[in-house]
Length: 298
Picture 1: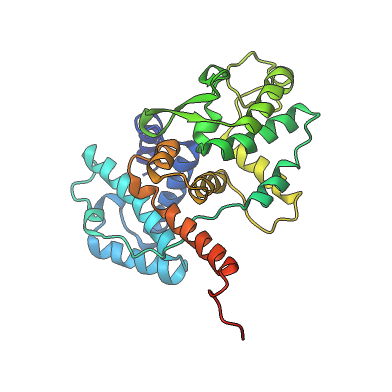
Picture 2 (picture 1 turned 45 degrees about the vertical axis):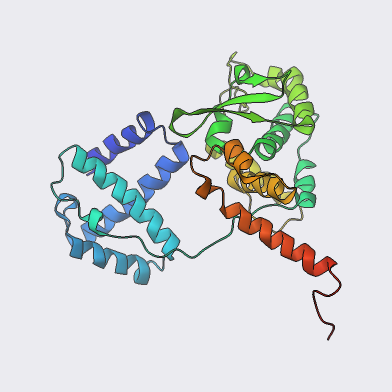
């Protein structure tokens, strides 16, 4: 089993171009499934539909997983078994018969403008790492980049004169993203100061760790966690929350959905439409706060 999992991870990394974070998540879900099979005395290449129904009951009743978590795990396993079938390691893919569970609809989490300002004030701009950390915050919010796209950036991807970045997104698709003056100011400082001091190995990657090497996705997540601990904010942070903030604020300020779709690099506009719900909630909040006949006095 482990050998097949290793081949599958290589397939995701080199053929599907999945990020390390996604591959680690898939790996964790599949290993949990292997543990269940061992406990039940089942062979991974002989699993039947009835076995999977019991596995769903196990996730729901013993693991107390919600529907979204279960669907994520099923997605990881469905992809794994599709790979096994293509390699002719399994004859019957029982996961094809298993439909996903109904997801609880959750709106994307995002930061308000004042909360972002508090985050931006944390990094010490007098130090190379402080400049880098501030740029990570500014660029994630200014561009809506995925964390995998961010850590893969090279200095040659940036057109400083036009404030444009050439990004290699999902499926090796290229797109251009724009950044504004606040990000531009921090970028220039970092490139002329902090970057030169960090770049001990003469690399071309933009974001470097203290050893002068390309920073990892896990490294970015750690940096963000350390930053928010130094604020008064009672929220969790991740690169994706900053991406959500970027999209939500654009729509709140009147940007059209097609433009947001292109900036985010979404293949389908349906993936972008969830942000319209957030924008609607914001409109309702403003309406009830501002319109004199929106609420009756008690």
